[in-house]
Image (cartoon, rainbow, N blue to C red; front, top):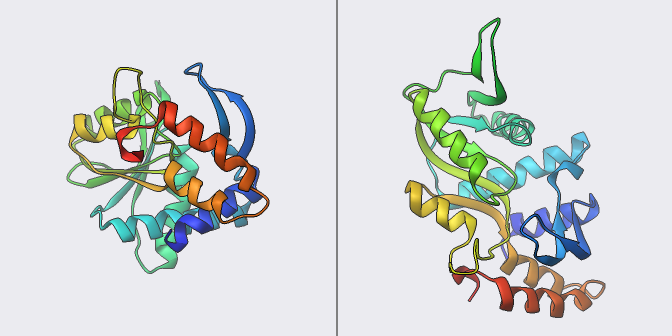
Length: 219
């Protein structure tokens, strides 16, 4: 694993954003792990997370010139990433969406820098069904921007449906013809627990889950 993946998974574990046990997901699947980016709830944790996002993007080579955060978790993530890039001497504009259109003031669902003519990077925590991402894609297009890519924290790398070999991230990437970059995925998580004496017991359950639900990227 590259350093940003290891740093991210260690940070997620320490922040309790990554937990092991038995968790029933929205899909009904019973997962041996759970990820909740809302647990990155301190300045230091968020700043460290932003560094992991930036390193993953720099490694992937995606070109963009505006950061877009879909409501709600994408808003602080895009803002934190903009601050990280400013620290690296790259000043990027930021925009985000509201869940509901505002009828007064500036109105609409978009807030922040104008999207027109920009190569827009969507920043979020995960892609599950892909509904929120598709909504963001429409908002960016309507605003005159071009979607340059999507970056997420964790790719679960599991089939979006029983009859499909693709993960949710793969499906969005194929449908929209845009790159999806993840700081880490299920394969990285397996490598991470395999290197830890205290987490080694989780490996068999993760392998069993991947064997049952893994997308074609994990095989």
